[in-house]
Length: 470
Image: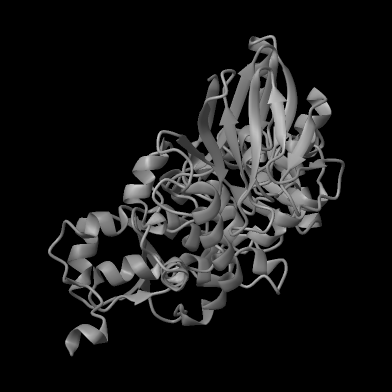
């Protein structure tokens, strides 16, 4: 069977391209649809269907642009209520793609419309399942996202639906089927996904905690819900965009790729409420940046941290990037629904610097310097996740996770110096830029983060759960 996984590592997303006999289908496409159109053109195939496994929360799907540009029909599973023209399929409905068959298996649980697509080859042999967020490799989809859009859909209700879907629709299928999930490790749609992006269903029955044959529904619900962290704040907004529709990416790019020289950039920044977003890497940003700009490096988990740190999805954004990466930044913003970039600094930061404009810096230190100053008992703020902090941290450090920084600004001292660190220096520079924007100037950042500190003699400890002391 001709099925191709198109994986995008920065958001741990997998789309799928299915082709046979001059017809093609795309499953769960990303916002930029050019690669799918090019793939079909290379096969001299017509895209017949765009299959969506559910209304996604962690990214804005490319279903609308792809349907418009290819003439394909959009397909959702049962109970979906899209705000645009689409086929809402019935459970067990069959679709033909060339001589292949795609069978609809309604598998509610992650969301109520969640659907798994069973792939059947030209000889009638079942080949695999495109499982969306119903079944991952090593995990299953979290059941707590829909309640942020529809309050009645509690996580317990959805977890119960997911248990039934897995037992009644997925686990009875043949062990040799290949599982093609929508996400891999790094996605916030599950809690312990494997780095592998495909597997056989038989192996998942043996190794995936959620597919244990002897598990009761109550045990499943408890185990599934234990350890879930709060989902990123932009998730419900992406769901609504996927349900209701959105602007074409072509329009978003036209608006975002307005080239501005230093004077024009300064003028627009001062005359609008635009946020200045600098996407350069942390070490480069620290050496010099436009005052009041926020650093979220494009080489890291860019889209996720944009979604975490910029509350308003309609926020106007002015971009500073490495020259030549402006379009990439606009596209990656659009993947999570931030469609309102309004221009970029032509030539990047060097243009600003050469124009004689004011600049700011962040003072950084290496792990060895941190080791030497640690003896004087400075205030240390660790902005890693609580789970990372609990695993191991510097003795005496204060934990304020990056995604909670705006709610805890009062805990950052203004009259005493302090030191920031994260795991490797990426997140701490996001925090540093936010603090600089809000008026803090009395801190330093550890460039290698805890990874560097771990190799020093600085005293470290782990959180001990009180129950282990009994």
